[in-house]
Amino acid sequence: MLAVVRIAALRQNFLPFTGSPNDVDSGAALLQSGYRTRSDGSIRLDGLTRRGLEYNLTTSVPAVDAFDLASSLSAADAPVLREAAAQGLIALTGTTSGQAPDLVGRSRFLGLPAEVDTRISGLAEVLTASAGTPLEQALLLEGFFRQEGRFNYSVDIDPGHAASDLASWLFEENSANYRTGYCEQFATAMGVMARSVGLPSRLVLGFTPGDVDEDGLITVREKNAHAWVEVWIDGVGWVSFDPTPRSDGVNPATGAALGFDIVAIADTIELPEDLEEDRSGLVGELDNRDEFFENEQATPDAFPGQDLLDGVGTDFQLPDWAGRLLLLLGAIVFIPVAKRLRRFLRLQRARRGDISAVWAELTDQLRDLGEPITPSMTPREIGERVGAVATPLRRAQERSEYAPEAPSRAQRFEAIESLRRAEAGFRDRPLQDRLLAAWRPRSLRRTRR
Image (cartoon, rainbow, N blue to C red; front, side, top):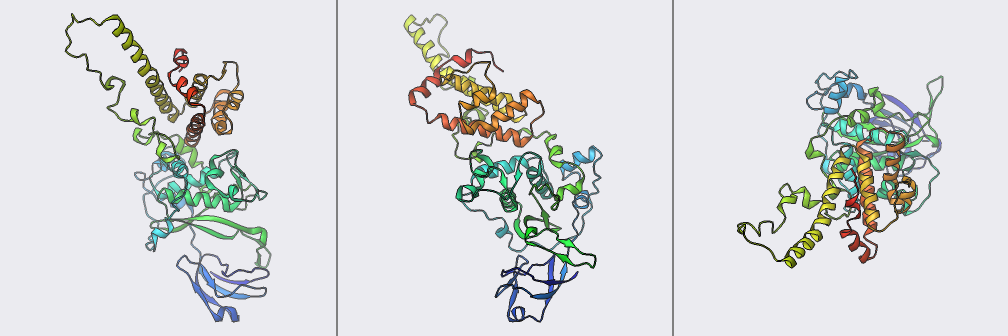
């Protein structure tokens, strides 16, 4: 493509262009004095662009259509799209759409700072767990941000460090600008999540399409400034994805070309049990209270010392005081172990879609801590006993009670994560209250699911 670009009011040390530049031609002294094309495809100037700068560009503009790209996949490799094909939404041919050169410096596009919160990678793994190809992974990540009601687009957000903390922005409802922002926040979030699941990605700063005049002149203004993500797909090259949920339609999602909601399709796929595991190690600094029960040999029948009486003759009788002592010791061991087992089983059910199991665990823990929880209380009233950390779980429970619908995999993840944050807050309560809660049998006497 040949384009003539004229700068009206832009001051920066990069040249704007469309596609991949092949040649730049200009009589301007600024360009003749020096510029260089960097390995990421950008054109860096030795000075700044200025009003009146004009140059000719010959570029290659790849025409990547998500529907064609998805159709070229093999059904054996793409489980989410295979399900869409089974529903008659797409036909998978299994034919490749050509070969792209290898990605030079791949590790550069996978690097993440050591201090990135592990909850981000945990969420990314949950969202892409059913995907079998990089394209599916990228489409699911993009679709997560574009789901209606999950995020809010706004340029009117608070400044400051707290507002730019990605984990707080994604997970903490009481943080500044929670899930609200403009293109840079959304593109950064998707880029980090993509890299955390092994997808090479880069943030692209540019513009949305401007206004086209009858003579073909395209005017791009400051309001068209935008940021999006490019993900490297082997065999194809860099493919653009736009996670920003703008309502004006100027930045359609790449996944919109599919013609169906790929996130909804992914949520219908039953995952293998080894992928439905508890990702406690991926969601922050959490304790390992479930670890005992995640060991297949650590069942309630395999407690230490269970065989101390093996081989004792049937004529042997324990003294009364010893029997009472054993009963007391048994109760001391049984109550906390039973609660841990109950919690583990409830989380297993929650991962399969039963949000009420997580809510039941939260309310039982509150009762054991001495909170006056009654059956007549609403989820909002109970949530106020915990604070903002329980808001995602409370909202999920309200949806479960008042507008029953199957929760998505991301909603299940957020509900479990909300329980864990509430439990972390419980550890700040007085030691005496926590000890009483561990051995108080109140919640075990209740008939609960």
